[in-house]
Length: 277
Image (cartoon, helix red, strand yellow):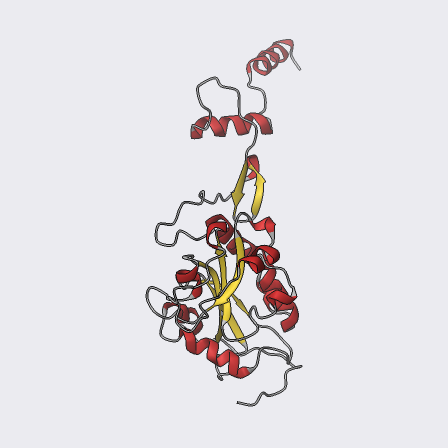
């Protein structure tokens, strides 16, 4: 190589900007987004942010979830916890809800932030206890004393059970599988919305299917938007009569849309024996 060319390359190298490191790239992104308090301020350490995949370092947060805000319509909602439930459902994926029913039910409890314990044995096991509700601590001891929820006891005291069986890792507040009765009205007149003044995180609705077998379910949010579907296997599902009654509670309401907008295919399960209609 000629000396003149060697000198030119050396000068170009001296004046070329140094390669960006991960730290410098992060600082540049923060400056462009206006995240530093003032020009020339030292980059802040990575913050922990809530994302749709859980809690991650701020430097690697790809999809940010907006901070939970107070809900004027339903102030008893534990909104941060409710959003964490939706994120956990997405994280678990559809295969978690296509196991034999006992395992599928345990996954539903886990998704909703509930322990699998004697006090939660009714959750998702009958037609009625299928509203996963995330309520703030201030409303946990409400009991429907005024009888505002028709068909539910006026001493529906759940506070101690909620506190004892809620998983803490989903955030402040507690979880419970509350009664669906009254949910088909607008606004809903069920335990979640009236007794606890809370939105639901999800509702389990058994779907008729192509042959009215009610062997598949959908999980929908407070607005009836589909979150996931489930196709549990085996012969130990809740009784067919309970599954049919569950769908009847929501039929004609926003909560039935995802279950009826198309005919969900029946579950192929070679271990299943025909149920009595």
